Length: 352
Ligand SMILES: NC(=O)NCCC(=O)O
Image 1 (cartoon, rainbow, N blue to C red):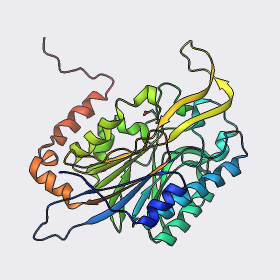
Image 2 (image 1 turned 60 degrees about the vertical axis):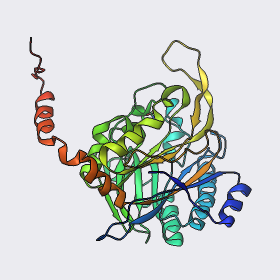
Image 3 (image 1 turned 180 degrees about the horizontal axis):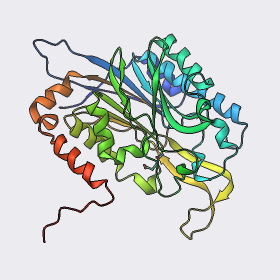
Image 4 (image 1 turned 90 degrees about the vertical axis):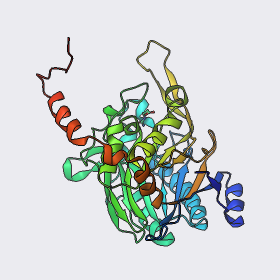
C-alpha cells in the first residue's frame, strides 16, 4: 500500500521548529470493509538526545528529560496522537557501557508510582493519550531488583501494567547484564481504548520468537523502544521491525535515541582497543512498519524527533486473510520440537 503524508496542524509544525525537533506524519490506509468500521489510531514515536551532561546531578537530568519530552508530547497532542511511546530508558543516559553502578542505578524508579510514572500519568490524563514509558525499574518488593521495563499508562491515567525486557544484549558496549536480569513478565498485551499493544524492548527485536509471542497474545501494534549505535546495528535496523510486522500481521514501531553520550570515566570494550569516553552515535531513524511490508520514512539520524503515524488496524486482518501466516504457522510442530531441543540429551535430527 502506498503510504501518504499526514497533514499536521500548522501550530504543531511551528512548535516543532521552535523547539528544534524533526516532525513527520504519515498515513497507512486499509481497504473499506462492509461489516467493520475503520479502526483508526494515531501513534506518536519520540526520539531524543539526553538534555544535560551525564555528570549533572541525577534528579536534574531526569527533570530536564521530563521537560523536553513533555514539550514533545504536547506537540503530539496537537497532532491528535492517541498512543505515544518513548525510547528505551528514556529518563537517563545509556550508561550501561560503563559497567559502573553509581550513579547510574540511582536512575531506577518504581514502575507503579515512581517520579516518571507519575509524570506519565499526568500526561496521559491531560492529553487523553496512552503513554508507553520505558524506564530502568527498581522493584522494591523483590529486594530492590533492577529491570529494564516499559510501563504502560492508559489514556485515563491508570497504570495498565508493565513489560520487562526479555533479552539482554551481550554485544559491543551493551553491558546490560551487569545491571539487570532477563525479564520475567512474559509477553503481556495491553488492551487500550485504541487497540491491543505490546512492547518488545530493544535487543528483543533480533528474536523473531519474541515478536511472535506478543502477536500470539493478540498484539496489533508492537513497540520496539531501543538504544543502539551506528557501527553495531544500523544495517539491521530497517529490516528487523519491518520483517516482524510482515511475519506477524501487525504494525511495529521502532524507536532509537539520538546523539553521542560522553562519560567522564573512560571504559574499555574488551576488544583490545583503547579505552574511550563514549558509546558511539545513537542514530535515531525511528519508523513504523505495516503488515503489508510498507513502512514510513525514518526520522532524522541526528535530531530529536516526533513521528506521527495514522493507521487503520483493520489492515492487520486484511493482510492476514491474504497471506495466512498465522493460519499456516505449524506452532504445534515447532512447540514439540523446541520442547525436545531444550533437553540436555537432545539429538539433532540429522540423517546420515
Ligand atoms: N539496548 C540494547 O538492547 N541494545 C543492544 C544493541 C542492539 O540491539 O542493537
